[in-house]
Length: 335
Ligand code: RIB
Ligand code: CA
Image (cartoon, rainbow, N blue to C red; front, side, top):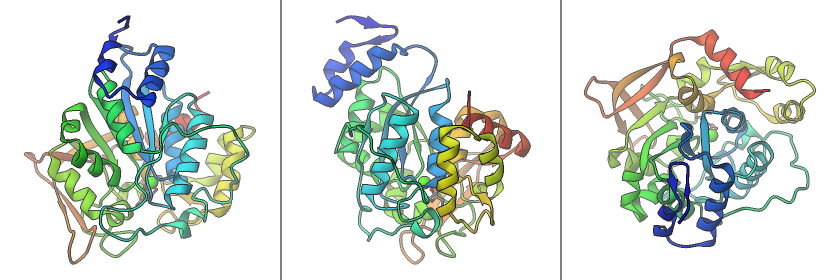
């Protein structure tokens, strides 16, 4: 079996031989990025306006080796988050496999945030006709195939509810050993919320999933709710920077249908961007060691991230606000 850089293609032969795995192999071979020092990542997302901005930051970064993008129901229904993730990935990240993930929480009724993100999930923007095709209808199984096909542990970046990750760990407990850590926009540090008085939206959508992932013992870097308010960007600055670009034009339509009170009129609460920027620019954040508590009872989705030097997790605090604002704008429009 030919070697590609550090990757030994024969590793793939251990994974369940499937069309998807063969396709993965073709993508990696074409990139030949194995062993290039880039961080292998899988992104799980429910686009979502702030997801779209975070994805664009990830897609333009030379530091990330994006192996797979998986949709999950959250801001809007799985059909819409999948359509949004497919278009954004294929248009702005190129030949990265995209899969359709879980359409409903583990054990609760689905909720959504279309009042914030618009009926489509990406404001007033209408995705143009295109020929992009979904690479997998079972995103969780494909996530597992990607993990097994990698010759090094993969970092998960989650921008929505953790339904896919909890399902992956339940179906394939060995996946835990294939995951480096999880950078997750989810939860709040102090039991407060943005969708209810008590719960942050991603935690509220599927508290059982969050609880299962916390209990799995996988290292989690939390990008908690309050960073969305602290890391807000002015829409006018985002549009000015993107003037004359296709993505900038897209955002002018996206923002017409977006309204998040957390950020205030004319701003975007950059919740999800923090999970990406902490990976790209860790020097801009403090990483606070903590414990994590998830309420799946009286106030579902309520969380407490308590500072603890012996905690198994950490949560982010912004150390350099102006530097983060510059980094987000630079990463949105990298060239
Ligand atoms: O609470 C903020 C989170 O909920 C973000 O991920 C946003 O996209 C929504 O999913
Ligand atoms: Ca999101």
